[in-house]
Amino acid sequence: MLPLALGLLSGLTWGSADFVGGLMSKRMPTAIVMVVSQAAGLVFVAGLVLVLGEPRPEARFLAVGALGGLAGAIGLASLYKGLAVGRMSIVAPTAALSGVVPVLVGFAQGERPGPLQLAGMAVAGVGVLLAVRAPEPREAPPRVTSTTGIGYALLAALFLGLFVTSLDASGEASAAWASLMVRVVSVPLFLIAALATARDTRRLLPREVGILAGVGLLDNGANIMFAVASQEGLLSLVAVLGSLYPVSTVLLARWFLHERLEPLQIVGVTAAFSGVAMIAVG
Image (cartoon, rainbow, N blue to C red; front, side):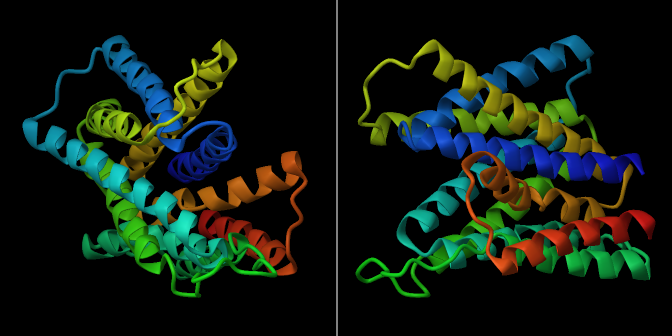
């Protein structure tokens, strides 16, 4: 039960980090949000490694973690680009298919969840797709069609799926080291992006730095929880629970921003958590 709880908590924590990070992205360039928050995450996981005193894993585990950092950076950049140029109601559900990748990897490794758990995976997956659908604007921007941004969304789904799969593989040696290697690679990439694209040169307020640091702690804490959960439980099940992160973001937007949920979104949220219950009971 503990692996399932950690998998669910990792998804909810990722979604919370995305929500706060999204709010901050409305005030400053996204690249700045990413580099400050993830730099704070890098400091956090580096300190955790020192406190735990875990020996450095073999080079192959470190390499997988580094590749995970590259995959995560590509996936996140693709997601933001897709949301910027396409319709959120199409791009977001497509990107949420990232959970399919680790599920398939788990099956390939011989994992065989029970019948009720398989049904729960399907119900939760459909629930996520429905929950993240946003209503179409009355007037779509010029040249924006139903397929605009779909390529970026598919790319995001693939690389974000590879990212969580790498957390599982690298976490076999150490969850903390796996998360550290992810940030060792991704932070410099985000820094380069910030230097190349940021136009806002004002100094960040101490409060803003604190909020962004909190985003980094949430994000990296979720990485560690997922890595631990995938080692203790079935990757195929933990991955479905971790992929609930968009549902968390949608609910937080409803509670704090008073955004109205469409009927299909309500059905989706209900289905997602019903699937979680089926997985836990099965």
